[in-house]
Image (cartoon, rainbow, N blue to C red; front, side):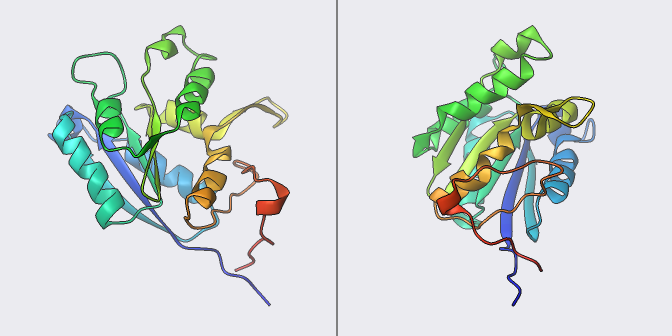
Length: 200
């Protein structure tokens, strides 16, 4: 008997004045979508938005992706620095039920391997209803490093990526069972929370 992978709906939100105005092409969302498809066995449906750095619009988009679209996971890119128009974390916290501080701490730890300015990032993660919302970096290279982690030349994991903790978090809040491809990222779950792997 075969077991099907759970379907999952994921919200992707790019916050950028210039990309939303069509001045340049957004590259964060294609990077995110491609990485998620490579990392997960699950059938995925993406709901994507590109919006300007305006807190009311960010809050409205996050509420839509959670309350109306019912995404189990929402990933944002951009707007997490200290500049006056970087308001993604402020909008995220404004619509949150609970804050997940460890995600922001881990993202900064990974980024500090590359640049000392990682301490300027205000990236955070929160729960709203049965959805995890995570603020990611804006650059495609940094998005992949943050999610996937770092390996040496032999493939040994040097720094576990953020996504290793996301499937179990989504389990705990009542979402679909996300199954990762271990060659990309290995999800951590305690043995009591592990299912027999799906095969279709």
